[in-house]
Image 1 (cartoon, rainbow, N blue to C red):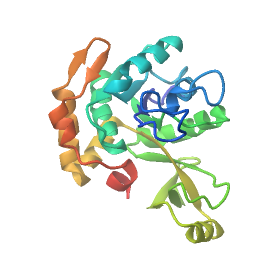
Image 2 (image 1 turned 90 degrees about the horizontal axis):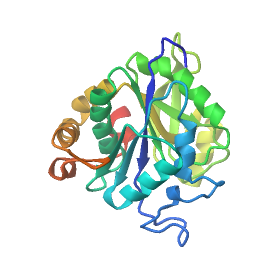
Image 3 (image 1 turned 60 degrees about the vertical axis):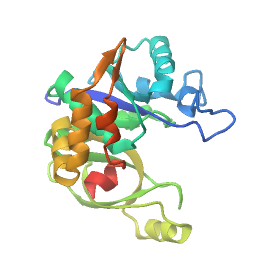
Image 4 (image 1 turned 120 degrees about the vertical axis):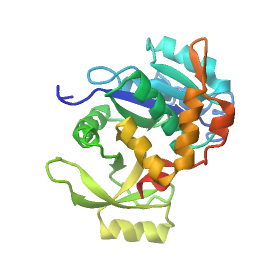
Length: 261
């Protein structure tokens, strides 16, 4: 990262019910905690991709049942997190990111926040870090940045991002024209034929305060309850427990449809 670019706190979302890849993946050990792509687990690979120069210690978001599993894998990876935040109930990406944003704004003022899933397999981590470096100046200007993946075919299991015009003075960064929910095959083929679309990676970079400001505009209840969940939360050994009543009152939803359309 450039010296003028703020440092980045990775926020690793590690929920998951363990319903995919059964019987390898189970509720007590979802796929992100399995070594599916090498000797390290997907969770540990994710942490390794976003550590080192320019990155601060991560915030991990997980459910209560997985807290000791997360702690065990963090120790094995020799990573001391900024926080391990426990969700009392699942609420999807946006509420988890909102609570994490309130926490990061308090514990790492001035830092950017990178939200990413814990179960991706990325064969070229250097390419991801390059994309993050390109995105950081835009995020530092208060923009909410999402990352796209060049489609390898008309996949129906992913959402799509339609790109808008390039942004002046920000190399490699374009506006988002619209988000497209998972299409059927016919529409997916039409999108690829038209061009200008990417698979939605589910990775986001922004200033915590900028994200919370947008939430207050478009989802004020979510913002208020997420911030209350942090304010009323409690430290429990090496974990931070979100307040159950406040977090349970958050409307559930993903970031793209809740905030960025």
